[in-house]
Image 1 (cartoon, rainbow, N blue to C red):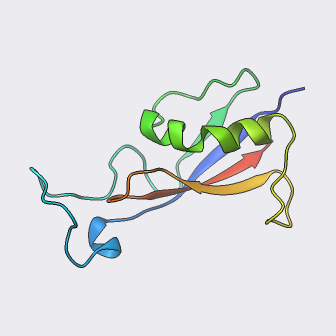
Image 2 (cartoon, rainbow, N blue to C red; image 1 turned 90 degrees about the horizontal axis):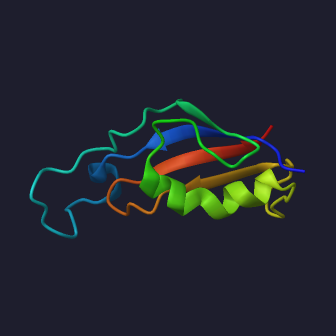
Length: 102
């Protein structure tokens, strides 16, 4: 049996919140991720497909946890079952997500 999973964007970080000075020079100034907004929600269906508009890079980063939750798994570090906190792998502009089995 597969479940749906809700993804909530908890927080997007501006690079200035992470670094005093950027570790690498960029062509354009770096700002917080513009793909999503804090508080935005997405649903992963029982079929494993995500609702439109979700960042493909973030999807690759959190997919293993999504799969675990979709198939009924739980993480031992959390008291609440069916929940995980993950982030995308953009090291300059991280985005934190809450994943919840529904």
